[in-house]
Image: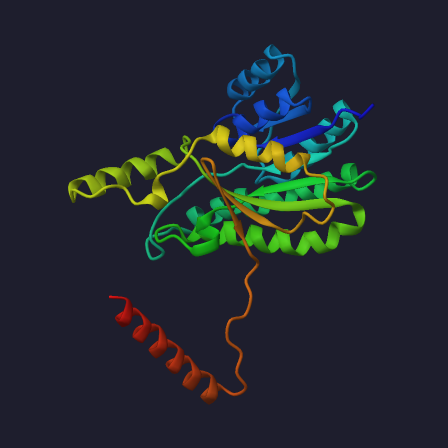
Length: 283
């Protein structure tokens, strides 16, 4: 008989985190629900228990290493182990770079990037004896950039470096780490999408396909299936989830390597000219 697995999910009191917590609760996981607001945490815990699952709530700010330490210790004391760690906690402080305050920059990196580090580092002692899974929620903003979100884009890009580094570092411990770039309508994304929808409506234009997103439950279903895949080589990967559309993002690879700066820029100009000529022909 397989032992019951324990999953710690940060930012699980609403949105994508809540959907993942509910999905794993239905799948038989013992779910440690993290958030910042006791009432919201309790509501998710009760919802999981109502469906016959096992859950406990842990109110902690992942940007605070002391609170993360206490939370992980409490999860270990209650469940004995952590088999799955999902870092989903996040928030937005959008602004153009020139107007962004130091606090807006720092607060977003503290939650998304430093929070991931604190949670992983503290959870590893409860994972290394038996292996497990770590999932980090990144974003297309981290993969492609997003104007007006330099703090968020930088934090999410940092998570990719964390995934690629720790995939190699933790392989011998049978710990897999992957990233998911979700596109879903949540409390965090709704204001941005509604703003853009109104903006394009004024131009009598439809919302670009990039911003036509799925639901949080779509992301949760993918996460549930990803965790069921037992391939030990399924690590260090990045997956995009938008509704039922799943995208696999490859690790960046060099596309041009030339000896010497002069030769490089000569080749660069030829490359640009070829792309321009190709565009002209297709018109």
